[in-house]
Length: 347
Image (cartoon, rainbow, N blue to C red; front, side, top):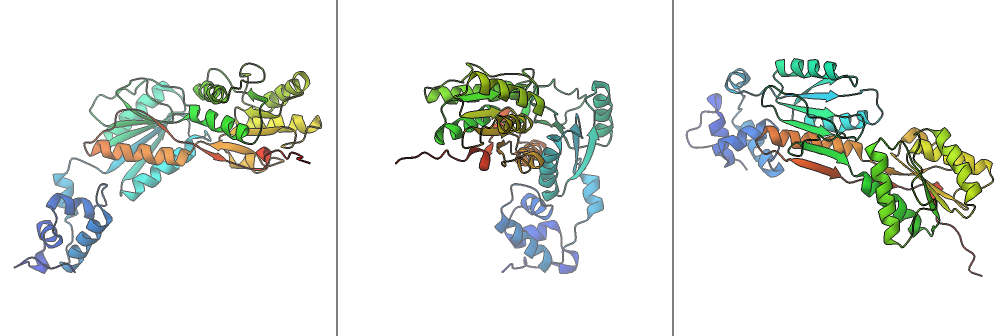
C-alpha cells in the first residue's frame, strides 16, 4: 500500500510528493505518469497509486512550457500504397501509441523533392524524431536534416553505416525456405526469382544457395532464375523447368506472386503440388497464400514487428540512447499445404 509523505498536502500535491510516496526519483515518477519507456510495470503501478492517493493532477501547461519535446513523431514513407509499407506503419504506430506519442504521416510518393518538402514541414512542426519507411529493401541515401533530430530507417536501410536502420533478414528468409524443403525430403530444388535489381531477390538467392550448400546440394538449374515479380514469370519458368528437369521435386518462388504462377503451371502440366513438386514463396501475403490451390507456404517477413522495433529504437534515440548500425530482423515460416512432406511407400 502506498503511504503519503509526512506533511503532504493532498490538495496541493506535487510531482515530488508523488515520487516520495512511491519511493522513486522525480524523473522516474514523471516517466511513469507519462507512459514513457524503460519503466517497470510494478514501478508504474506504484507511482500511479501514489498519484491517485494524493489526487495529483499534472500541470500540463507548465509541462509544455518547460519541455523542449512535443511528443510528436514524423513518419515519412516513399509509397503509402505499397503493400509492404502499410504493415510496417501499423506496427510503428502501435508502438508509438503505447507511449502516448502523436504521429504525423507524410507520403513522398518516391519523389526526392517531395520528400525534402515533407521533411521541412515535419521539422517545422517540431517533431521529436523521424521514422523513414522505404518501399523496397534496397539501401537508400540518408535524408538531409538541417537540425539534430533522431532518425531511424526501416525496411530500406540507410547507406550511411552510422545511421540506425532496420530491415528484414532476407538471407535468413532464403535459408528457411530451402531448409524446410530439404527437411521434407526434397533434394532437386529450383529457384524462380524476382528482379536482380532488388536487394531482396539477391539476398534470398544467397540464403537459398548457402543453405543448400550446407546440405551438399545445389540449385537444380545451377543458379537462381532472375526475372520479374509477377505470376506470368512464375508460370513461364515452371513450365521450362518441368520440361528441362522433369526430376524437379521443389520450386522456390521469389515472391508469393511468382509461387502462385509456378503452381498454376505445374497443375496444368499434371504435376501434383505438393506430392510431385513442393512450392514455397516469400512475403506471406494473405490474399495470395490463402486463395492459392493448394494453400501456399511462405516466409513471413514480420513487417509489423519490424515497424515496432524501429519505432522503439526511435523512442530510445529521442531519450538519448540511440542504437546505430544495420539491424536485420528475424523472419519466420508460415507453412501450408503446398509443402506438405512427400509420402513415400515403405512396403
